[in-house]
Image (tube, rainbow, N blue to C red; front, side):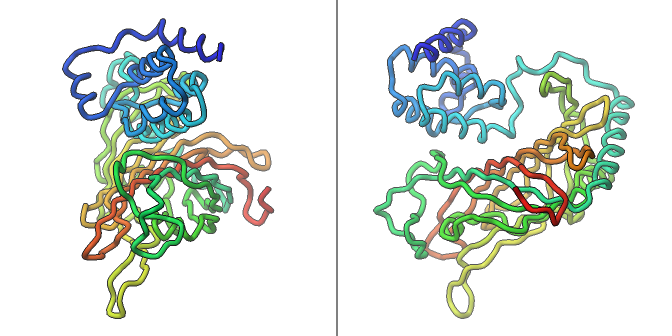
Length: 374
């Protein structure tokens, strides 16, 4: 408890009072707060001697207007009054992972000219092509935390998933609902799910990505560059290094990405049955590139979907790092976050059940295919 108090004192020393400007008022009206305001909220809760449950309830349903970086999350977790608050801090980190960090965390550097931008992209294209070519049929284990809604157990599910219930109430409130693993294969940078331990009951009310093939980094870069749709965005700092961030667009005609979820209630001639949703989509997103080496540290992808689709939103963030396998170094995914908004009622005419989910994953046990997973 003393540690908690001291950490919050330190947060207070670097935390000015909540600003009363128009932007802050607008964020508050929309339940959006800055990272600094989240720090202030924890300080205020400690001063009021609120319990772990009270603090967790206070931040449930809030959204951040900027990214909660892993470094800032670690500080907040160290100051958390208990596991319930820590879980909600993790939810806020996942929910903000597609956003830019606070402006005060961005490096004050001039925008590179067109020639310098092209040089960075050329390095990235060369890096991605070489890195993908050296990846020969690796396997890995993804350890996934599934965050979704906690529902009233007295409400029965319309589609018979015993023990699981339909969404109701504030769908912005999310909790850890399940943990499972997936086995993935990575061949020349193309990643595919080959096995999953997800509970079948969970999949019946919360469709999950199935047999999704994620194209290699070099393919994304090439298609975006080919269409002339890569643009400078900003400088950012990751692990103390300056990183060049570019936005990109890849249209549906390029046919490189599929949204593939199982499964949804679908009306057929024989009545309702469970069917997967598969659709080829365009993408927009961001590349995070080391300007000196061309190494791609992060990829953000947002699928271009329609609200009439069973899956009307899918956002994916993948962070990459160096992994050594049999004395060879590879740049491979080390973590990912997938956010989805799903109409889990499918095309049922009397129901429209929105489910928001986060899949927060860490990669482990990279090895050559055929070696036993540890």
